[in-house]
Amino acid sequence: MDPYMNPLDQSIPDDDLDDDELLKLEKELAPKATDYYGILNISRKASDEEIKDAYKKLCRYFHPDKHNNEGNKKLAEAKFQVIQKAYEVISDPQKRAIYDTYGEEGLNAKWEVGPKFKTSQEMQEEYEKKARLQREQELDSLVRSRGEVQISVNAAGVFDPYEPPVFTGFGQPMEPPKKKGPFHALSKTQLQQLFMRHSFETQLGSQTRAVIGGSMVSRNGMGGGNIMGTVRHTVSPKLWAEASSTLLHPRVLNLKTYYNPSSDSFINTVAQTRTFYAPPILTLTAGRRLYATTTGYVTYRTGEWSLLGWGGDVSRKMDKSSVALGVAGGKNQTSYSVELQTGIIASHIAVEYTRKLPHNAQLRLSGLVSTTGGLSASVGSDHKVSEHTRIGMSLECGVPSGVLVKFRVSRLGQKVVLPIILSTEFDIQLAFFGAVIPVSIAVALDQLLLKPRRRKQIKEKIQQLREEHADYLAMRKQEALEGQQLMVEIATRKMRQEEKKQDGLVIIKAWYGRLDDIELDEDSDEPLPEEIIDVSVVLQSLVNDSRVTVPGGHAKVIQFIYIFI
Image (cartoon, rainbow, N blue to C red; front, side):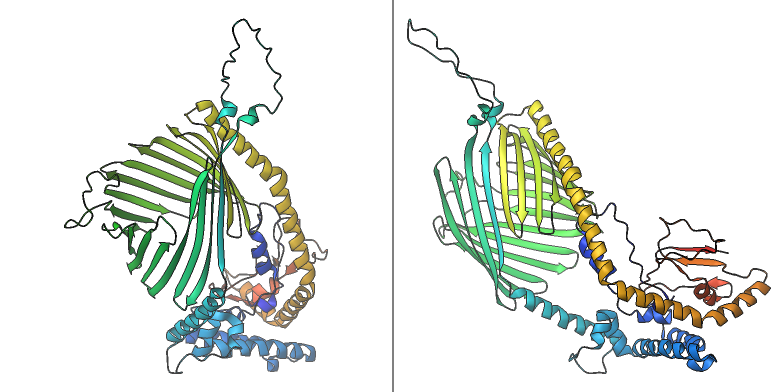
């Protein structure tokens, strides 16, 4: 069905939407660009013959010479100009390639991308390359800033009821116990560690980026920090490498390479050294896509080693070699990973599962069985408060690591993390309440604050867009009514032809718009609501051989049509 025959429906349900829908609403409710394929009523994959046939058919409907009424003739002239414009673009291979890639705006741009004798596929690839380079240059001018602050709090004393005994001198009376205030337990909370890091990333060349960052840690009044510089260079679309080094002691030099032999495989290498008196510690990871959404990989780490005496005696060094075998994958709502590592010093089995929940929440489950770390598990969720702000919380517990609750807030590349140690030993009661309380807080926050706020924002955005596009919608509806007026004679003739057939298709009523919240009676003579339009004439005119065909492959604005036959 031709888009200019239909009004633009912008009735979108307000319920069960989150903040991510605000940007989608702006796009969906904004005036749509002209769909030339829809005007010609053809698929985007239509052949040259199908394009010509569709154009000839529309000429029979909308050519001004086909109408005797002076009013209809003027309407037909306006419609026919739109049809001719669509045919000129779609029938021309070069214009069609531009339109398919960049829409109507691309037809008005000046393209200097090679000789005209190239095929439409080759031209489309050049157009995409030119636009991609332009987007990259715009993004490259920005300096990316990333920061993180992590404040570790030890609250194990709050949940430990043990009080040390009070000793008095011989013969001295026992002092009466002091009254404890309601916040006495909180006084046992200790600030255990402070960690901070920040980095800036900028463009040095078309294929080279630089990152400079600093980090510091303070634990029980002692700590240190360092500054690291990194240069990352893209050698080719399949290979890029980076080199990084710390500027202060201890000095560490890292060299990394990332190589993709094919779209289904990768090879990553890392070389790390702290001194030139020993070979660097090497890590090699090779992976390949096993299934559509599953990738397998193997990682080998050399640990500290020696080569012909270079590196000395490494038998007493603690960093030993290890091999890991893993599988990772996922779909739209879930992701998972399983890794088995075996090494001289430590081995482990790690499993992680993540699932997206409604309203941008995430559920994470992870487990680790290790020869040195025992057993651990975690569960958590993340919530999107606004377009650039997220909050999250998680519970981690294990043997012998204890119970830990972690809160996170991130905004525009800056992150604040607050880990709170509830117990240094595994406690099933603390683990239970440590999971229930954060979940209860998250549910209450979402239901009482975030969800009402989302609905309010969405309703305000919808009302704002409706007001902004009111004139445009009225114009589109008027165009739709004029298009139907020109097709009355054709629809009447086709209806008579179908009535004479044994299995003919005669459309009695067809309504366009959102009808789920409106009760309409097809036998009623009452006028239709403003957001509903009768498209019976349009659909009847599209009947051929007792069928109605609306080709796919291009945007349609129809959301609901009720047809009574």
